[in-house]
Length: 559
Image 1: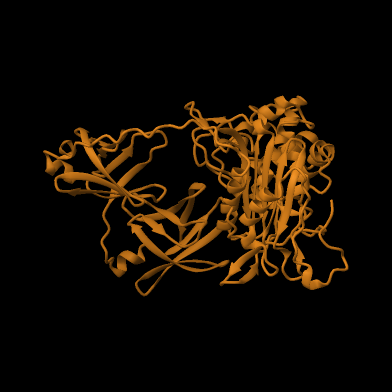
Image 2: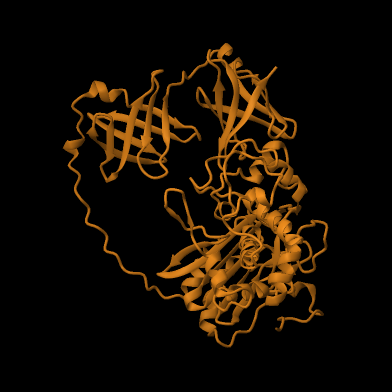
């Protein structure tokens, strides 16, 4: 492999891109590839490294822009990148290899290997962790709520301690898919429990060395010096950039360090198995399945999908300013790799690059004829009964829905969609443009109006009404100190003028918006939605964090 310049080239030329000469790639095609990434091929900008794999060769690899802006170090196929969630497939493959050795089974209860994880009265299997169906709350959000910043030093033990204090799950294991980084940290701990080696040690001996991935490792010590590594950046203003700090000392969900040259060897292993067997690859790429039998595209640390009619194995990642994606088209024996060190990099360029090489064999499906909607069927005969259905609704997770009456018809609105509804039973309506989608309205004994989406994964919403101008006394009822015994942390709610403010010792104050009387919103990404908990007399007892990858994390109001 040749570099385009000698080490004695003057500094002003050091931004020139590195490339691998590819005799099998015509110049015209190489130029099309380069044009896709020309935007980042600048001497004063972070950029990316790309790779194209065919059969048993890396047929094209090239760096664009800088791996390190401060020292004018260009990106190259040898540049070491932090993989973020692309790491997960390697953690999963370690588990697959241990299963083949008979040292564990994917349907084993995790408590067999992780006695420190609390008994939450549900069987959680290794497969649940692999498929993101365990119901275990996500570690990054838990840590952020507890006061740990993502750019703090985060060690493996730090995460394990937080997970060992879990008091509830987001849902019954197997009932839903919810991406959980926690599961992959726990899988790393299972590898350690079963093999007696850390994930880094096991993968090094069982995967990386046998494949010749000599510049690859799980980076479990943030102080370790790694030669030729890239640094990550965010954009600041038009042409400026800021460092995006990453100080992880944990592995499993993230933290794989590698380069394009090494990753190409892993891509080849999907269709030319050298480590493990083809049966192991089939296990790795077996789609997940929920308790109700519904299949998930997420397999074991990798997504199984299609691209232009071809089977596709893919995963992407995002940590700090790193953006990574690796896809394999096994039946074509091809793979495509893009690593970037800029937070706003357009990862859609990977598909554009792949489209230069993958012909479309997908079956052309004629669009179904548009069926004219007989809007007269939507005209409501009993407006008095229908009026109780109109209004604003909200789910436990803070997702809003609105139903409104207009011209004797009922409409549903959410996220910019406006759907005409047709009444099919007294309390049941179907979406006119999609008759399989239905809403079932009901009234509780306490007089609350509810509506349930009648399709797989459908949510339930509760009708609410909020006075636009709460009195000082009403606002003061929210104030106080709130404590989470699970995370051993506190947040305060104070009243400043007419505004409620959420406070914490580790973070700047944030204004609270009342989305509804019992639903509070903030600008914290880790707890953007809080559901107020009340006692039998209506007094506020606490709140739950119901947001993103965490549900029902309780904070109690304390004196």
